[in-house]
Image (cartoon, rainbow, N blue to C red; front, side, top):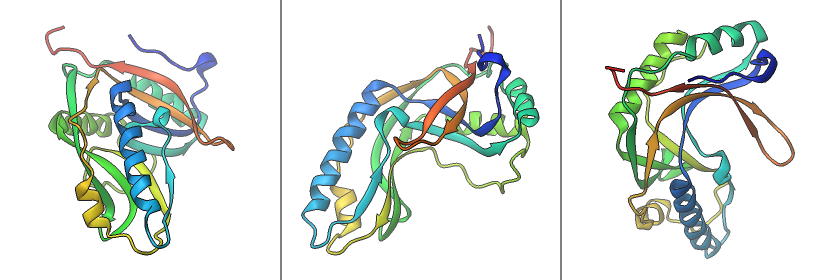
Length: 203
């Protein structure tokens, strides 16, 4: 079953994603608290903007600002079920973009379920083409934990990130969601516009 926005309101700043469950959100909160405590011990602690647990998701495609007409088309293309059986995603390890030595964003990685996520990302791209006009990039499934606004001093980032233990937490992928993101003083607010379920091929 799919769901669309009330009144057909699909326009705005859009992205396609898969949700994570409460167990992952709780583990991320624990990991972020551990990283934050280590950073506070630095000579000059970095400034990091952490993603709120409620906003965690696996981004499959970022569409950006989308007109109402184009968004309605995207909603229609994404609504049909994905012919992929629901599956588990196991999370392990902390990394950084563009590199641990020069971090700008911190993320949690996937050790199981990456191939299924890649297949779904490819199917999203096939359905939508390239409506946002963005260049294709290699898909690396991850959860963004925070963005570093100031690197500070006295932090050995590679050593710190390697020392953080993610406790093999698991989430379950059951649907693909098209979201509209609205920015506010309290941070982004996400509204689900379309939910496309994952179903077994023989259903």
